[in-house]
Image 1 (spheres, rainbow, N blue to C red):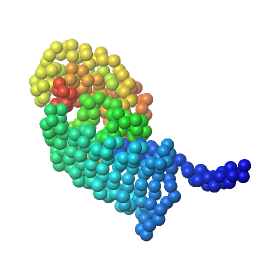
Image 2: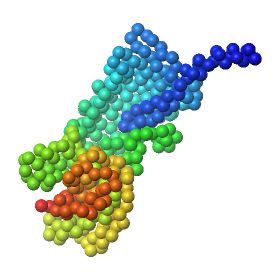
Image 3: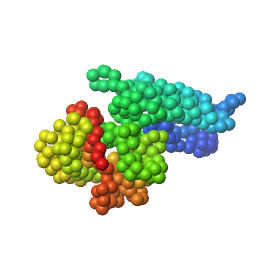
Length: 369
């Protein structure tokens, strides 16, 4: 009995100190929560070394990181439960600063890039997504490439985060392996953003980054008033349009665009040709489409409290209708449907997008003055 009591006394401090911590690990644009137990710190001349093991298997190291006077500094590593390296990077003064590498559970590199003072800066390559290019001060800059299904390079050109030429790429990179059970731990909204379809994702990127659209919106909502143009600046951050997307798929009509087609005023030939094929039937298809809730659209807003609201239709006949309105004040999620029903149609800016047979955005028409 005394031996049992003595054994309990010896292990009690260890049990009490083995506190399970929910550790948030950032993996590029997403994060995951891992339950770990931290070992006692190790002190060196310049650093405090912190090591954590998996709570589910204390024989395996989960995290290794070091601290100096200004926070995280030096080498930072995280591991898979099988012992393989997951992330290897470097911190300086509590900011990512240096090469950043993300591995799959078999040890193959999935994503590699560089940080400078907490911002992506330099060459980045996403092996799973087959895209690569350069960042400058946290923004895509110059040439970016995607390898398509035919193993051909598709080029896009950016300038300080703004798409100048090409189809562009969505800003969200879900770089974790969806077949990996650890995906269940992902807590960032990027997982939700993955739920929207390809056409919606391209449309959102188009709205955020297209320079012609930016100029057209300013002209439309300012009525060419310099004072109003200045007010509209608040809807742009680093050159990107800031808007909230209604959590709905509405039956937006295409009557105005069909009228423009009849008057030979459309610019995009492919859109014009689609609208000329059974226009009455096309009108009916769009106007009679059922209204659907789509919370994933709302979750992909660039600014939830923006007064610029965007409404999407469903994709019909390779076409997508979008309405943009300027609200008097930001709305709650449940208010968008009623708000749209009370709209003055003269305050709505209409857009029609065309996607080819591969689902790639290939043309846009705007409402004419």
